[in-house]
Image 1 (cartoon, each protein chain N blue to C red):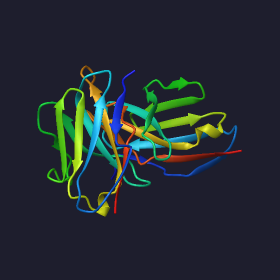
Image 2: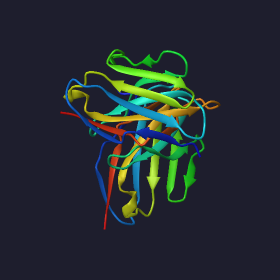
Image 3: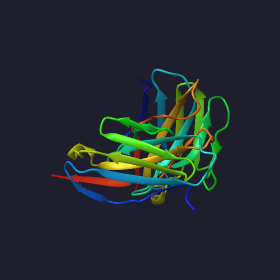
Image 4: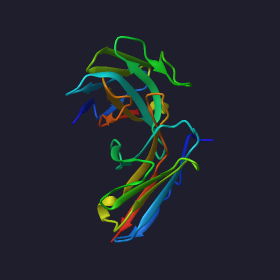
Length: 116
Length: 109
């Protein structure tokens, strides 16, 4: 089946630094990747939709200059949290859609970010 | 109003019990429906899709009522390993999934 690899699984960083999270589709080409964020005891909230070779589409209320998304190839999308603050501490999960499907169905294992 | 609403629980049930979760969605144009399972601090995993005719997978039965915009999940003969958060998920045609906040199930010995 389709596998999505997400790294790192856990990261602790200092306030004001940037953190990059990678999401790779290992055995299929992902034209679209979705980035979600989940705060404790809350649902996954879509942050942005990343399309290979074009700009990401951000959901309302998500700062595109703070959460930089790059989807330069059909197998890799990255999310960079710039100038991280404690309120950015959350569980970030990517989901990839294969070329011939219409929705993201395979999830990465998630990245737990803690900003201190 | 949230797009997908679920009772957060927790549902505390003994082993062997039957438990049912409900979910409502607001967008009548929603096309596809799923139940996902999420263990603590892990990514969600697909449990089953939900079809209009209702579908069963072992101890799990899912139902969809489009007229009422209502989805349900029934778990029979609960196991300790069923303890998790169950997420009601809807595809609204925006090419992304919309998640409910989840219903937490704790099966007790």
